[in-house]
Image (tube, rainbow, N blue to C red):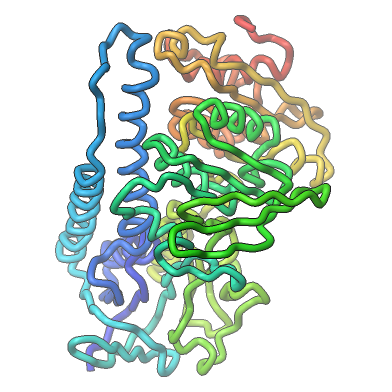
Length: 464
């Protein structure tokens, strides 16, 4: 039986990053993955393939709708779905292959198979070559799976998950997306750009429920201009599948019902921790009422040598959050004193325009008893945005009224996923909005919108 300092169950972003960091710190490390390729949901059926087809669909949409404004003739533009999917697969293969190389480079032992805890230090691996290994410490990093609604379960054809929606062999004529979160909006955007009639159905009063309402409304208007039908304060009460179509019955907040016929229904109401057959129950590892593994501030479960990270535990289900948690646990095991501020994790929606935020919204701050002030600045007033043809967007900065301390930043617009990192850096550094606004920004750049929004908090914006 092989013995290790650390065994990591799951080779997604949290797991493989944790294994690499642990190996760098001198721990004899193993990682176990049940799927053929390393990388987990993110690299195989999540973040990376979705961004690949989002980019392909955007290039097509931009060519057909906007390049004429730049003097580029695109009269005969078309797309080939097979090529789009082949490009997606190639990108995934390159990145998952790269992770396999990193395992070798860092001398991490890789086991392929299904892992199950048989004791606090023992893992049974069932695969082509079943075996048992021992480890002083174990990290659970098995990730999450899409939430399935019992009354209309996935069939992989007409009622589909996000995984299915990444690999359609033809563009659907119509699709209803249940859920106005990041996954639903991103995959809805892909197929809408390629010609599908898309309806987004969100039960709450705005899309991207954790987002600032004004920012979410700005994104809603932009997506509607692109042809997406967005229904908020609406729920799906029934679906009926026929040979060719799905009949979807909707009910709005006033109780009025509406029936939509569509070719596909994408259920994108969130994800849940994946802990099936891990042996957690037999070992007595505690979970909360929603199925998340219970941990302390050091990511330890109630069994002190077993840790859990990523989508298995509390906090946002984000790959970058899982990565940092993996690093933290590896460093704790190596005797270091790492730190991560969960309050400043950026959250991003890769539609076009993008939506990105970090820190507190005004509503969040008020719930914490803080009195706030805020400023906003629109993309349309920025020279770089005008030259790019990217005038749909706004940056909103939130600050503590008493201290001027930056509390949060909320962006919808082109390159929001990159701009938000300026907000993250400022939050981590404890900046006041005055300091953020007084920093010299290059001109002309989109980052000047962040500067102007910070200045606007105190009524000092120059260009707006």
